[in-house]
Image (cartoon, rainbow, N blue to C red):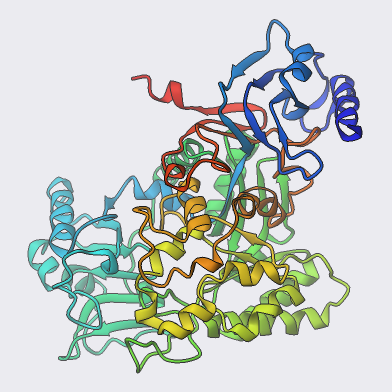
Length: 568
């Protein structure tokens, strides 16, 4: 009761206070937007559920019942009758690639193909429309998911020959779904003078056939041997705008962009300064060089852009067998993966970050990479014991050695994990890792949570679709979208629904230092809200995936509305 009374006192103050984010402007005495007749999950432990929300400007003014918000409704207030729909704090994608989401809509889509023949047909169709000699780009192939696997003849991959025969005159570059491997054709290799004698760079691999010639598969840093022309400024802007729209359509109000260069950050700053960002972006500088070039962190520019994290990539991916493991791959005994960034570079970045107020986020998938990340973090932290709130992150945290799990809590490391990755990978992960290693350390959400580790959720889009409902479903069921618990799903590690929602809201906000402004529906916080067609906290499991986003509200404004999106 006291908390409820306090919310009305704060709401009254909001009506006459100056807006910190909008300049010296007296607040109106009525709400700009009211949501009523719904089920509101606030993520506020003192008042976990409500029925209605009133928003003044860009802030939440009242959280309560329909009767509580009624006095704030005026002639200019937009009132949305939710008719029982569900309201949650704005959902946050804690690890994705925003430009990649938009770019995926501009190139050949290879997601969901049945096999190599279908891949070739899609590329061939694109080549027929392209200018002579134009590069053909594509992304999304995932050979582990193909129903026709007859083409996978060299270390689990296909070779370029059939592709090169079908498309001889255009250079072709096709990224695997995870972005850690690429298939290219003969034309592309010839243009780059890549052949039998070419050696891979450190942290990469060129898959070669029995004759010693490249098969066309390039893993991790070896992909840099194929220099694809960069996007033009116009293409970059188009990719950004397409990416933001896709996120808003899926209820995402804030996006942790995991590794972007100086050029992209400059574009984000320009959009933020012009008020053209419809979604909040938390950008991670790609590598130590970019972090140093930026200098001081960029903190909440206009409330829509933050750049205070450096992203490093410690190893490759499990699917392409580049993840660094303590023991060899079960299905590739001569291979234990590799580091794509030397340990010394992780240590140097951590030192610099602790000294200059940056956060560090390290991509580490294999158990050896995760141990290295922990070791380098700890070494740097011991030199800066006065820095208590560093919130260093581990991106993916997919395979852990059991001995390292308590170290996450001891060092205060945030586990940035993608629920949907588990149900994508676990059906075949035991073949890669063996049953024991997969069960012990594969996507061990509960083992981490029980140690007190904060888990933040996402999709790694465009590796997986940015849809948070699918990742929520995976997090609480450990089942694939068809409901099949095949493979090493280990259901004892699934999250509760409240844990999964926290990983997308309040804990996600903590992961980017925004929990005081975002992540829960409380009076005085910024009005970032997602409205869902179904109550994902109570509906039967098999109904979760059919839940739709009906409204996405960012900074108090409706940025996506399903009913309007459906109008031709």
